[in-house]
Length: 162
Length: 250
Image (cartoon, rainbow over all chains, first blue to last red; front, side):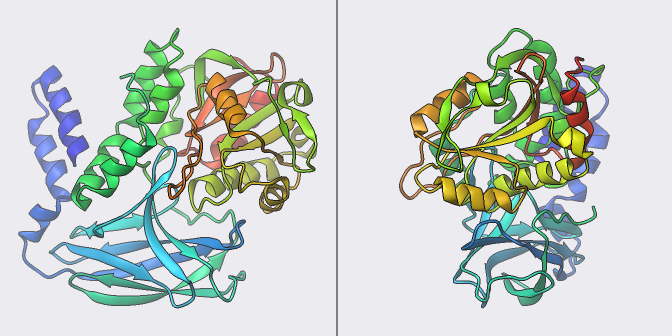
């Protein structure tokens, strides 16, 4: 969003035209703008998977959160009864940071927890994940309550079709 | 354009103490203009040793999960999916410890081979294993003869945890021929800096630091010519490794 503004500002400065297009592209995904359309958040979770880990005590979970409703929601936390702990993290260029304060789930949009981005770090999964197995994830949202999904255990180098 | 890569402590506080909206916006702002920034960086930074740092900083608040914008050619005529560097870097002439516990001089032992070099740590949930996983998938697609002309080298940025044994076990999950090196962290930091890669010593209670990039070295001159960020896909490596093996210049 901010990037659209930035790029557009640059484009507009150079060309003097792009302002209308910029406004449109920014509003389609802006939570505040979407919330104005009224209907409640309608959240579902899909494509959850846990790749086999090369590190014995650590694994990671990825998934997509689809919000087809007209209002934004917020993912407050993720837990797993199969793990000693679960933590939402954001990868950075050279490390990662814990996500504090939850994750915005804008209306009419998919929020991805995916490679090299947001992910859930799972510590000490028990039993240890096995190919074809499942890891239970419980995602608690501010408005939509708790959604429980079974993440499938995938090969170490698995990548979902995009 | 040539912002220095922020100190990790600064990055941490910026991300963890601001609101989610800010985090998202920062990640968005940082990740998306990368293509443009890489383009400019590639064309303007020709003589600048700051290029790698500049590239790294462009996604310092997180990289886009779905795009591989970081691998868009910065030089249009380059045959590589990775970023063809306007300047080269010598392979670090550094002696570390390999996964059998023996001294290993990187420059000597890999001379005459194409090398993919990455600095990272094993107790890393996301970027380090996905980077090595992408390299592993790419290598697995190559004919055996080409595989033997390439060394994939992983240098630990968390040597206290990454003993030779831990490194071997971790790398074996990807490819048993991958080379793992560990040793004194100051030696590692110096070696990384010599190829423009920022890493830092682990601090208690903080997440360790991995390199923001993978470097591709030619067998002909043993210099780094191509750069990949965490947005690179395995297909980019699979495309480029045969070119690297032949030391194809842009």
